[in-house]
Image (tube, rainbow, N blue to C red; front, side, top):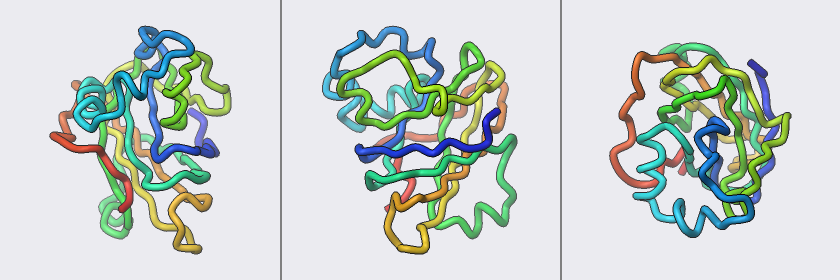
Length: 165
């Protein structure tokens, strides 16, 4: 597993998924407008763990750091921003992209935005703090804790998942 991805985004969120879970999206389509714009649409995708999305609260550059297992209680306690999501990894690969990539969808995910992960279900815990500048997205670090589970966790009941704000 890569341990770090630097992800500049122009949208207000990040999506992650296994490419096989996004094969149904036609290249060039505006999947955001048709299928991922309303919070109930995002929640439906997140509940399946297929095209998992969350709001960062701001465009910017995010440094995604990856860890196996669950965060320590102290990490959870002190993190300013935290969120739990579920993921179904299929094909041993997970891509991390700008939410706005869904506006003009291209199947190809840049290699530097991909991690290898064993197939299965994961509880994904995100932990982050505001950067020293106080500006969301200013080279903000987001720690992704990938905890393998026997089934997909049901964590988000309603609304757009937000990491900060």
